[in-house]
Length: 325
Image 1 (cartoon, rainbow, N blue to C red):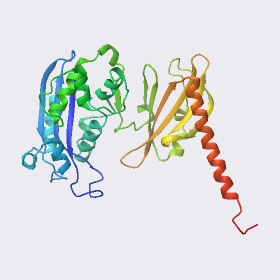
Image 2 (image 1 turned 30 degrees about the horizontal axis):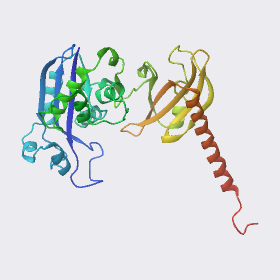
Image 3 (image 1 turned 120 degrees about the vertical axis):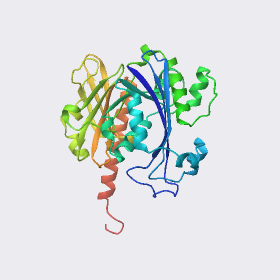
Image 4 (image 1 turned 90 degrees about the horizontal axis):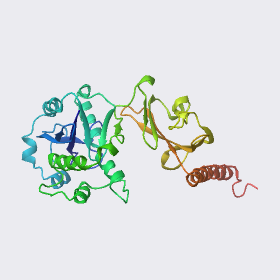
């Protein structure tokens, strides 16, 4: 298997908020990629400018960030032509690597817009090199880390400018190649822009310290929460169903939480996030993680806050208005 380390630059509406195409808020204007062999050694590169069809005028922020000129943009190739060439260049057995989790979303959204999404069936398994760097090398564990920060960490020479697709792909490839493969190979990510469509396609992933479940689509959150698989809290270590101590409730950050207990492995936190599709349907991303008693106390406290707020709201709603007594 080969690794395709990819980076995209994209343009957006230059006319301000609310003027963009909702189906294509960001239009890819440059594809840059580095191909690595199974030993993460350099094979070859891919670099193409794309002539946009939706946002033909270059946004000033895109121009300042990338250095791409309007003349370069006007002389680019059509997206469909470049995309087909790119997919042929990738080959038959490869895995994407990216810096961050947005590149593959925008690639698939652009492909869907141009009716080319059948060339890359998902969900996509990939390596998020930014996430890997944070886990393996960043003592501050920042959720977001600039590519240049990681380049400096490894002491790589900065001969090329950042924010051009093939340059960023090359820097990312060097970082990926410098990491311990034995440690990172189980830390892959899954992009679920193309989410499961049937129960048989639902995704169950087990990592070293947590598990993840990606559901099929539902019409409403209520329908999703009524589903047995969505509500289940199995221990990802032994596979047994854990006993609920705190049932699912809507907590902070618009997420649902629960607290459960495995007789063998202890306390478990369940967390559910709802994701929207382009067609306004929803699907569930559920994570199950072993936690400490201190972390369990935070879940109980969050639940208490929710209950107290509901009680306060009901009390205010039933209180007599001034002058009614």
